[in-house]
Image (cartoon, rainbow, N blue to C red; front, side, top):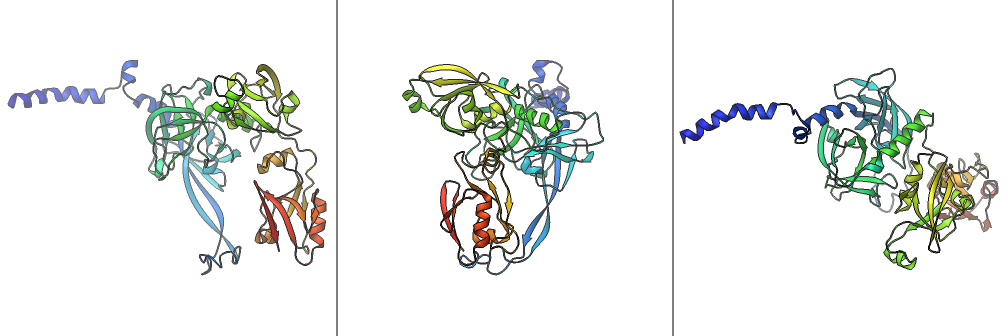
Length: 458
């Protein structure tokens, strides 16, 4: 027993030295993330935001299942200041920072806190709710630590990763994992659209906007959400790829305040095993086009309904969201090369990368005071309106842009496509406005909301 104690005492200096010594070789570094964290953590920041919401004073009827609809919108609204927090990543030494839109999109004040404790005000240069990305700028500063972006096409499943952020507001935290999947949709109820890097590195509330880095310290993506039934991290997290972040930074530096993504003007479905067998293919893959808008650049290039898009710029596509991602990050911002499958034959087509055309003119019309629905704003549907409101590409006619105070109370919603008003078909905003302006008693509106037809009587 005395011998064992003596042996342990003799080993203690060597144990202490092994625990505190800085790794001296690549093989030793591979056994510790500490050198990697030291190089990357300073470029990951905490973001504190303040925003103002409009809240109504509560009434005893608000929680009543019968009366709550009658008192919807009742009472004066009062501004309420709320605070939130998240994470961000510095991408340039002159203060370009990327975060999630859901962290900073509605903020009135943004405070960026660096790893060393320095604090700066920031402003949003560009934000996009669909992609859940926002580009911020810290003014009047230089020589900031920053991360370089990794080419998303080189990322492979199984790579080691670190997730760095500010979970639960406890301060900067690092968690480790691997890339567990690529080309993920993020779940049916997720924010953002299309293409995510999946990781099992724990991502918790407050990690949003933080960095997912590789073992070389390059940014793989921006942590955005988790897939969880309980709200806790269960090992399925999603990051927005660095290629899309690079496209956002470019447009922000070009002066855009909103992200202009290429418009496909098409709908389609992924080619699964059954559909692949029908097409005579030995494996699934690609997007079969189910609908094309007359102004679609794919239609202009020669695509037709029933054709299959196999690849964009040499990269295979497996879902409509992935095809849109490939178009959004195309190296040539004016055109993309797509592989088309038709009647068993493959060929290459060049597709123009254009924003949705704002043609024909939308002819926005606002009903004036004294009419049945003052403040109701209507517009003609064109490709730009389709994209803004996420309407089906086959939608035509007149759409609601703003319900107005009374329109909201009678049940109209932004994005409703009006078809008939008081038994009269409507094709233009002016026509719909004229019918509603003359209505004096009961009014019946037939509209399409999403995939449903609705009838409102008021």
